[in-house]
Image (cartoon, rainbow, N blue to C red; front, side, top):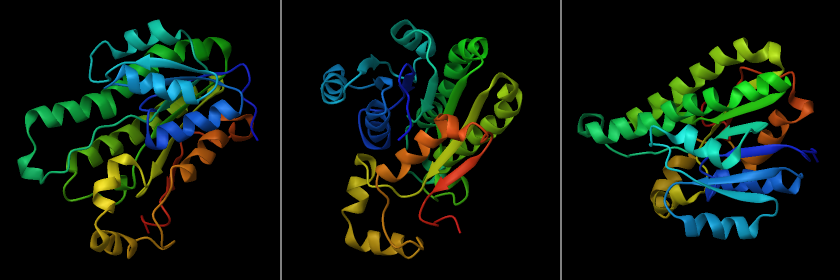
Length: 242
C-alpha cells in the first residue's frame, strides 16, 4: 500500500461516487484529505465523520472565485484530484446557454483555476501530483452529452499541455478516464435492465465498473512509484473504448 503520510490531498466532488472512494483510499494511506462538495454542508460533514484524517471543503465550482474559496479552506496542498463534474443528458440541439456555461465552468474552467492556484506551491517544493478525471466519452462521445464529452476532451488536452511544462518541477499531471461506473449519477439509468444489457454489449469485460476500480490507479499515479508517468490519459472502462 502506498504511503501518503504528511501529504495533503484535495479531491473535488468527493461526497459520493468515484471521488468518495478515492478519498477513502487516500485516508487509509495516511493522507489528510479535503472533502469537496457543492450542495450540502450536512452531506460533507457526514462524509468527514466517516473518513479519518478528512476535512470539509464546501464550494460550488461554478463560482468564479472557487479557487480562492477553496484555498482559504485548505491552504497549500501536495495532491490535487479534479473529479467534480456536471452532466446534462440532452440532445445536442436542445442544450441551453445555461447548461452549456455551467458544464464549461465546472468541468473545465474550474480545473484550470484550481491548478493555477495550487501548483505554485508544488513548484516551490519541487513535488506535486495533479490528476483530472475524464470520461470514456473522450473516445466514444455520447449522443446526448455533447458538451460534457467536449469538456472532458478539453481537460485531457490541458493535461498534456501542462505535463510537459511542469515535469521539470517533479510535478506529474495525468488524466484518468472512467467508463460506465456504478455511482449515484448512473443509478437511474442502470436501474433499467434493458439499458444495462445494451451497455454491456459494448464492454468487453462484461460488467459495470465499481468506484473501487478507479481508486487504485489514483494511488499509483500520486505515489513515488508513479513518478515517471505524466501526460497520460488512462481509461478505466473494461475495454469500452475499443
